[in-house]
Image 1 (cartoon, helix red, strand yellow):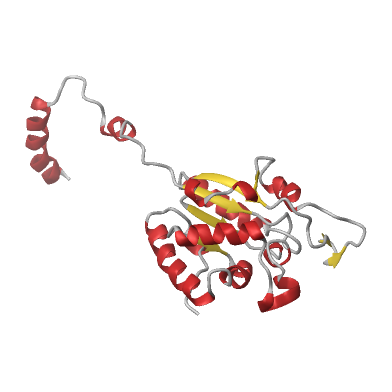
Image 2 (image 1 turned 45 degrees about the horizontal axis):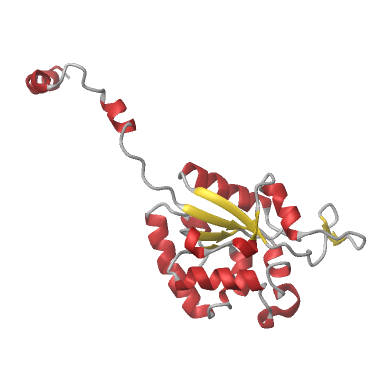
Length: 215
């Protein structure tokens, strides 16, 4: 250590001779640098609860990751009735209940949520769809119709807008099949896989939640 100090001391002394009297400390200079633009990410929910809506753990994990990355997140859900309501203590349908997807999704968003009809790809850099059976039941009819399913009109519109704009779309496993069909399964997955890698490199969206892949 003494040898290192002896080597560095003359350079430090020379540098200090030219430094201004009140030069900011390196840490202060770092914090005074101009902030980078924040990524604008749309998070699309399908209800509240893994069996009839959005999987809460996945939605929370995405929100935490995006928050740590400094992203600006806006949460959306369609204003439609749920396909049905599941009693999560039994895993069985509750025949006497009806619930609204937007209203239930607002539980996760703490009330700060917007109708999916107002989502535009022009206002966001990426869109993420957390998992849960709500994707197959409320965002599409995949749970009933399988590969012949229909996708909610605003979900279809949003997917096509982001896809055509070349912006990444993040899907968890339960969304991958019904949503990939909107833009053509293979072309959608191949394109999104490339965008996923680019987005992950830029720390725009969490790499582990981008399910798009070849196949």
